[in-house]
Length: 184
Image 1 (cartoon, helix red, strand yellow):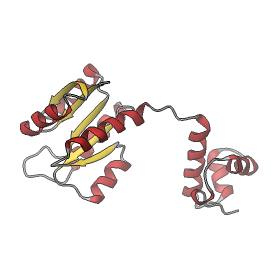
Image 2 (tube, one colour):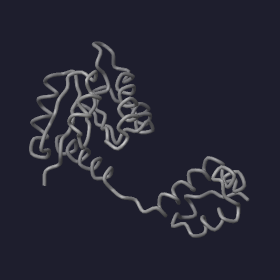
Image 3 (tube, one colour):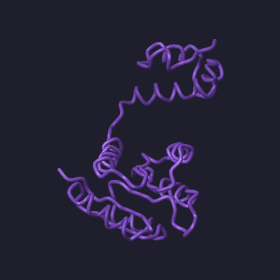
């Protein structure tokens, strides 16, 4: 089974050619752009299953800021399309920031072909998953409790429910005790 369309955005023509060859057997279509300026229009026209986005587009600049800006712009308009970032200048802080800002994953150049294909396929598969409502609720309760440092009263207030209702939700939650820190 081939996956749909993937949009690859990188300013290096050799990278675009290499990625196109690498992904040809996995994707029905590989659309390439050498600049992110037309990304939003191209996404609207092509409806890609995933986007592979370079982090740097200006000569001599390797901070990743351009990629982060485009990640935010694309993610804001198309939140359901997974975006995998790619860069030759990777560092852990940049990768973590990218993931927190909505990137599905992060790949470094030079890449391993099988790994690049796996990362893109995993991102598409995960984006297409339907998560049960009780799991979403449990994850949201966990996030709110963690944000409130386990303070049940504050968490219940933020969630707009009674403390007793929150206790019941935590008690019924499939989350393990070490995922929830509760302070009365």
